Length: 443
Image 1 (cartoon, rainbow, N blue to C red):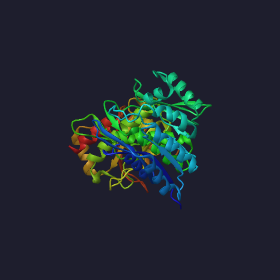
Image 2: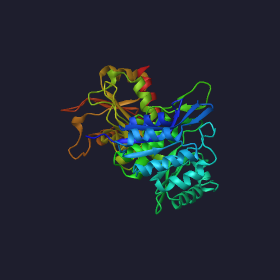
Image 3: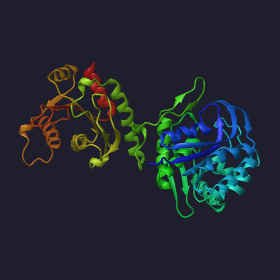
Image 4: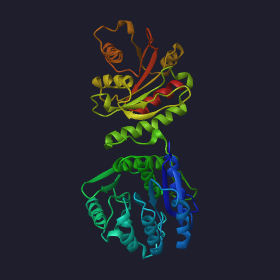
């Protein structure tokens, strides 16, 4: 199968945190073949930009000739251009080689605040590149300079997006991470319909290269054949996971984006409550992996779940889609992923809405003795006593125990049955409490 090609026309960043280097990182993650045309060579680090050397336009043109005379990119991403001359040269190259699908990230300054553009660049972008752009992805500051309006809220972002559409861009994504509030709010506008995309902020840090990575991920997902809104949404969630896995530079608040991990990519279309439940469970799974002995993992694997406050169905319970194995491999967190864990939690919540989390581990008589000596309350049920009318063993077993003892214990276990593995289940108000009870057993 032919591998998709994404071209980046942008500057080199000596620190590797942004620019061409970041673009190639994003393309590689997405499985794309990345091509590059370098516009400038910058000397910069996480603290400041020391120098910018714009390449002569004939050097830029010969790079394009070397690539585009034989290859046609599926999508092209444009980053730092620095000057009017380079912007005009880039526009001429797009026309000459008939490059159609262009994602423009109008870089004007570095994350340090240092300028990466001459004063004449903004006008040249508006005059020469907007009409050739499929999607433009300015941040608040860049959108203000491109439109001349002060942006303080969502309404201003929508107005600015409209002006960029009027200027020739087909689609606009204005990144609102610098606006005040707990959520990073981005505005998308295609000339007919607008939308606001939300993800909670990761506060207190400066992240290097986020604009470069986001626009490059969008370009890569477009090259895969995904629709624009889907590409933007997925790319934002991947970037969020890279920010979550970022690492600090010594003596600086700046963080370098880490590798995106599947478990850290938030599911799409989560409201704030679902996101908070997902994130709480996400951090708990990582802690669980560190402390969980392989000997505690049953043949069917370990799962852990966390329910919304007023859960009514399995779709309201977040759990692992792909249980933890003895090799410590596991899947992603998803609402509606587990029937087993959801049944336990939902049944317990019928008696006490505060009991919203559960975890299963391997049964053994030794573990039961450890549980009893730990001070935790543990009760068991016998599968052979399950009535024929029962629709679910877990619903019946949990309900049976709670009614019999008139309380919700810390532990519910059974010794299995025909074709059913014996199991221990730990219940609690949240994943942190559940893992705390597991640690109590371990200690």
